[in-house]
Length: 324
Image (cartoon, rainbow, N blue to C red; front, top):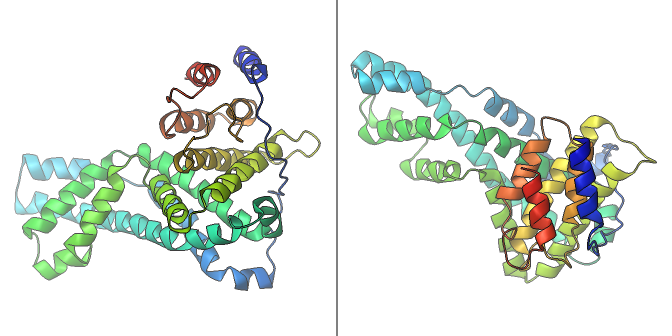
């Protein structure tokens, strides 16, 4: 690790002309006044189930054993047993997808306040809203990281759809009650077809917001400032944070960089980008924990859009390759 950090420092110092915005946010203070709770009630409701959703995904048990039995030795008994396990699993997946639609509705409200006008001032003035956005982005990282480690989801849901279309195990009304209608099942299937479905949701909502309001520059500035605030928080030796807060900031920083790279035409990796990729990667290795660090680096390598562009400096490509 020490040798890697030394190599990172060399790369950080080389051609390092990018200056991060000097935004300072207090990520340790999570206090909420009654007025805040009332003003942001719908957005707080969006966040309320996220812990339970993550726990539900973390404890997800695949139905592969029962599905294999039903396919390999089809009988009313094996098919009924498979259905008894697949149906509640499908209900869970439906809940995950439905929460993504809640995010679709809520995120534009956040962007409208934080990304219009003086974005640095907005992030500080609307600190509660900024924390809500950060908690949302943290949920996105956590959810997608766990989803990628749960490959049985798609197999389970494929079998569920097969049963739904055949209508063999019960009458049509009972079968459709698990997903309400086949159209919703299609949407859920498409949602989980992506490796990082929650990130895709946030990226697309942000891109649509930019297109509809023609505010690409201010949204990019807001995301760059938020990434910088996270970096500044973990790198501030005069104000050390709790380990869990540091981990939180690094996750938010990475997701913010990824979204920025998707919505900004030039991306996050150009020489003049307001996001300092070299310093950000060094911060991940210097301050990240053993559980998150590989996932954070992988997210930057594989979920960004412009890393392999010709405009990306070779030093950054070398830096990202050295972290594999």
